[in-house]
Image (cartoon, rainbow, N blue to C red; front, side):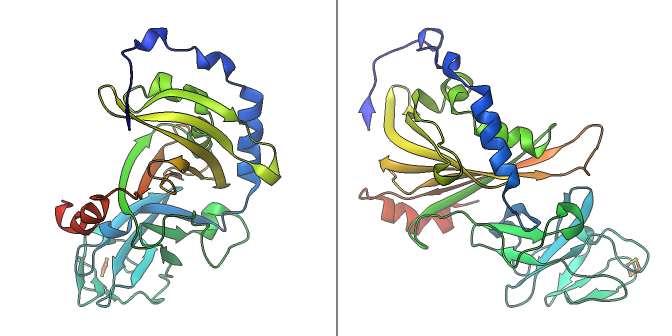
Length: 291
Ligand code: FES
C-alpha cells in the first residue's frame, strides 16, 4: 500500500486515447467462440440456503426455480408448476421437497409429470444452471469455473446488478481496460495497459493499476483480464498485494435472444486472498459478519 500524490480526475493521463476498438473486438470474438457448455451463472451459492425459501431466476426468458435438499444438494428446474403453472419460486420447501403452494404437488428434484430438472452446479461461490435450449451449444458436464485462490484461502463476495444490454456488451466493456480509471475513478487509478492479448495462445490484457483503498491510499498491482468462456471475464491479480485474488464478471441474459429491450444480469464475484497478518482472522470471521 502506498500514499499517492493529490491529483485531479480531469488531469490524469488520457489513457482513453490508447484504447484500440479492433483489439477489443477481436478479444470479444475469441471469447464468444469458446464453449460454455450451456451453463449460466444464476447467483451466489449462499443465496440458495438449505431449509430456506426457493429462489426464482429468469435466464434467456426461461424461468428457473432452485432450492436445496435436506442434505444441501442443489435442485433446479422450470419455474412453473407442471399442474396448473403456479410460480414455484413462491412455494415452500418442506424437508427438502418443493411443495407447490396452489394444490400441494410435491417435487423432490426428479422428473415429474413433464417437469424435467435442469443440471445444476455449485462451485462453492456461485450457482450455475445448464439450459441447453437457451445456450444452443454442445452441452458439457461442468461449467468453465475460473481458477481461484485455494479453497479456504480466500474471502468471497457476490454482487448482482441488471443492465439494459446484451451479455456481449458486458464482456466487451470488461475487455476494455482503458476505460477503467476514467469511468471507475473511485476504484482504479494510474491504470496502464502493460501488454495487450497476443491471440488465442496468450489471450490476456495485462494491466498495471492501483486500487484506491481510501482517499490517497492505493494498492498498486499487476493484473490480467481473460475471458475463459463467452459470458465470463476474469481479472486476476498476478503481482502485488492480494496476488491470486480474482474478480469475476458473469453476464447472464435475462431476456430471450432477439428481445427488443434486452436485459442482462451482471454477477460480480470477488474472491480475495492476502498474505497479510490479519487477513486470516478476517477470513475466519467472514461467515459470522455477513448479513
Ligand atoms: S398449480 Fe401446482 S399443484 Fe396445482
